[in-house]
Image 1: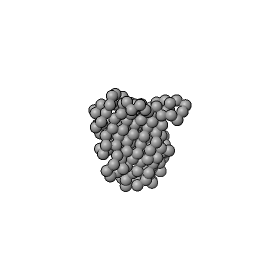
Image 2: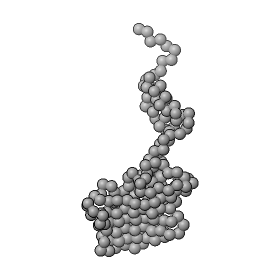
Image 3: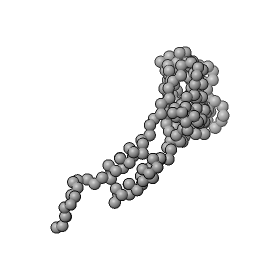
Image 4: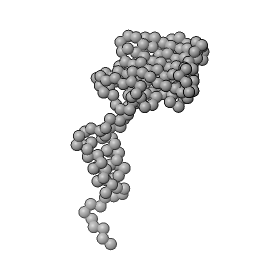
Length: 188
């Protein structure tokens, strides 16, 4: 009976070939900083991920209201929703293949309970043609800054399992164990 239930559960996918768009995660890996002051070094770079609530629409745009999770690091600095009083803002533009083509993304650390920045900041931007940078800073006094210019990093989509993979996995997990006795009677 579980096999029949599994087949009926996936019947709409089999008939339409469509599934509800799931959340989409993109990873970013920047280039090493060209200029850095302690505690950053020129071996450090911006890296992180953004998770959007749904898959992007080709040639569409997302902003911070579409972000459900993020985490970005640059050397010793990491900012994420788990970081007290951090906030993300930005805009992402997608090409016809659903890849991030241009972006402006900033994660800031704020003093708890206020809108005053602590100076903790990670920023990455690229206009899709010839202008952009990665930037990080530790405090407002100017100590601990790092950046590069005109050398964008890369975004990669983390693939979600396809409906076919999910169907095969469900059928495999529900397949009866042991030998099948086709055409034999099991009378005692």
